[in-house]
Length: 91
Image (cartoon, rainbow, N blue to C red; front, side, top):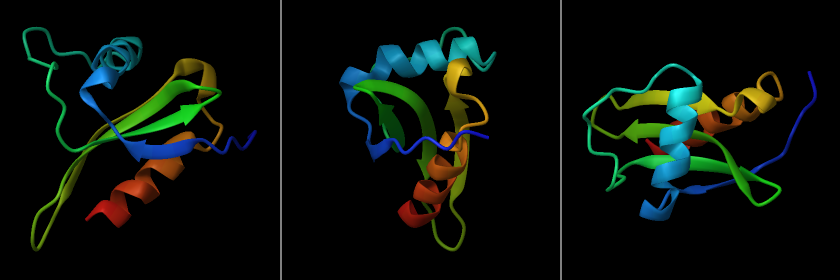
């Protein structure tokens, strides 16, 4: 495994198109859903490009992490694990 250290941040609506592409590339796209206004998403940026994303639905006593996606070029680089850790902190 090659470890990549991306910048982790909250997503903005400007990230919507890239997140949609990541969902398509990872066979997680759901046709007909409105992805224009993002809520609860965290993204991983590497070399000025969004290379991963995770949706987090915080709640008490239990929150939910959904749609963890990583650019296929960066699979097995640790980005998914870093997004999962960021989601845990988000709760």
